[in-house]
Picture (cartoon, rainbow, N blue to C red):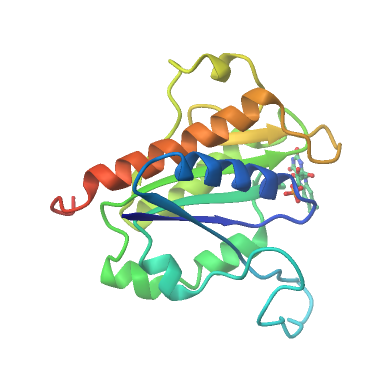
Length: 199
Ligand SMILES: Cc1cc2nc3c(=O)[nH]c(=O)nc-3n(C[C@H](O)[C@H](O)[C@H](O)COP(=O)(O)O)c2cc1C
């Protein structure tokens, strides 16, 4: 069994919609299960007390869920051309699993939601890949052999995505498909890597 963590931050729901599609892709693979988790919000002002449990939606990820994942899909909205602070804040707290090498050799992929086509969509995907590389993960993208990649502005070879143009979350068929492909590829890679020496 491969347990795939789909970890996202979303304020207005579009990154969450992508995360749900990634989960569908994971669950379409026999022997794989999807764990959907989010991260707490942060603020540049004095840190308010964060509820231990979100008011609604998926629970906050625990350090154990992060470190024990057989594969990870990481998603964040674009904020000034890079990942959102809550995701970065969470990642900055993952030193223990970096020291232990818990995620070395495990597959990881990324997804994002961006308002404008040239406002940092690809840059955000690449910013999300960097910490996964530091954790020693094997990066899974989306190949151009999938025709949907040439028919959408959301997502690319670096990961899944949607360009919202400032509208409410509304994934098109290609964005949904590519997010599912990402989940399916991470799950398939995780199953194939199980039992293999860590590289
Ligand atoms: C502080 C802030 C910064 C943002 N920066 C960008 C940006 O650089 N480029 C862009 O296209 N959209 C930017 N956006 C818009 C979000 O990326 C976009 O609304 C995204 O779809 C939100 O995802 P969500 O629905 O999961 O919260 C920004 C939004 C906020 C609140």
